[in-house]
Every structure is written in C-alpha cells, then in structure tokens.
Image (cartoon, rainbow, N blue to C red; front, top):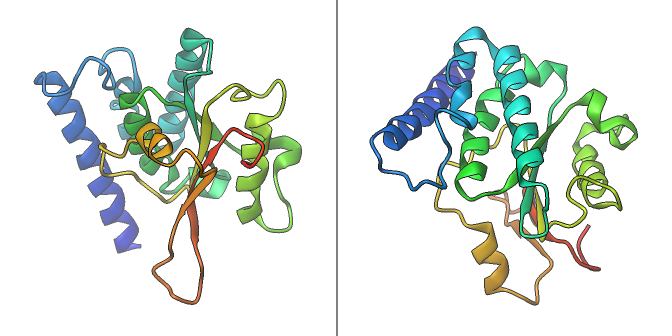
Amino acid sequence: KVHCVLSMAWLLRLAASFVAAQNAGEQPETAFSVHHGVGTCCAARQMGTAALDDCLKGVLRRQRRVWGEMSSKIGIISFYDANLRASFAPYAQFVNAAWAETHGHAMVLEDDHSAGEWREPRDIRWTKIGVMLKALEPGGWCANCKGVAWVDADLAVISFGLDLAALMASSPQASVWMSQDADVRYMVNSGFILARNDAHGP
C-alpha cells in the first residue's frame, strides 16, 4: 500500500513538472497544452481517479475529432477495469497521455464497457490483443494509422524522448517491437507492444 501511494505521488510530481516546463516555454508548441490538452486534467487529478479518468478520456476524444485523418498517426492503447480505475491506472495514463500528445500520437483508454466483445473474460491480460485488433479492424478508430502501441495500465513512459515513429523508420523490415523481459525465464515483456499496421502486424 505504501509503495502504491509513493508511486502515485511520484507520477503526479512528474506530470506536474512537465506542465511547469511547458508554462516556462521549455516545451515546443507540439507538446501537451496546459490550456487545451492533457494539461487541463491537472486539476481533475486532485478530485480522485474517476475524475481524472473521465477528464483524460474526454480530452483524448476531442483530440481524435480535431485530427480526423489518422494515416500519419500512431495509436496508443491501454485498458483497465473498474478496480484499476479506482487505483493507480489513471495516474500512469495521465503521464502517458502527456507523452503521446507531445509526439502527436492518438490515444484511447479502453475499459470493460468500451472493449465490448474484445474483453477477454478468461484472462484479462489477453484483452490487449483484442483491443489492438479492434482499433485496426476496418472502421476501427485506428484503421488507417501507421501503427498501434499497447501500454499496460501500470506502465508510465518517463522518457518523453521515446519516439515511436523514429523507431519504426529505423527498422522498416520489422512489424512488431517488444522488449526483453528482465526475468530470463520469459522471452519478452508484453507490457509495451508496438505493431506496424501491415499484413504482419496484429
């Protein structure tokens, strides 16, 4: 419990530091806006996880409507159920949404309701594959995206220099990117998955 409290406090300080840097003019205009983008959710975070989650989802929906055409975008997806929504997930995704906005990525936060039939009832971990497929299927919100990235609910991108478009461009022959797990018993860590939107992706 103490660890979770410290982690959330650290994430809030991290997010607040990016807001302060943007206010000071240290971020380019493409970075997240305190007045119109993810930064508008800074006040909501003090009202609890539900308010922060609602604010983030609202901002992300408005961004997708404004952008319209998604062919130049990379889609970022995360999923969490009601239990994680009431815990740490909105704080982690607050940071990730700011990172995504900085790079012009589109982002969707899925839940039990929005995931619908793609929600895997037997093992929630497999829902990540379902919601990636949902995004890329014909008529899906990211059907025309260059690629789509899955981010676990408890993962926060703390290096805003992580450039997925540059990563994809550097390896044109690759279709899926995953990191090696720290535990040598496992081949890969599926907490972050980047897939190109081609015949070999999801």
